[in-house]
Image (cartoon, rainbow, N blue to C red; front, side, top):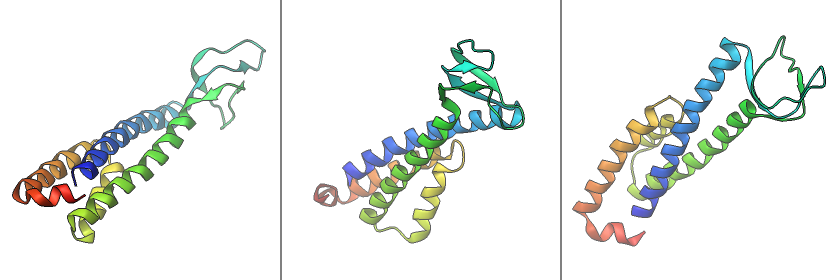
Length: 139
């Protein structure tokens, strides 16, 4: 159980950080119509280093380079999948009801909630392992 708890803890923090980056990215994308781009060249042929690029009408005036805004979206999506694996592993070992799995899974969807849920779950699992010391060593 302790290895599942450690895995869950790290995935909860990583997913929470990526979700906060995603919120910042969405604010820039939809609030300021800009994306973060590294490298590439602009329409005039000048090299673009690193920075925000205005996307007028959904068209990015930079060719080549790496769209870091899209990279954040992709990494968060995969981190959430890994987070769900950690949730499921801990949930099955703790034998909690299905509703508990759903509530823990929501931690990776609502900003800052993964940190709060992780702290609560961590405390409960440690209390359960302290109450049943042999149970924690089986897994």
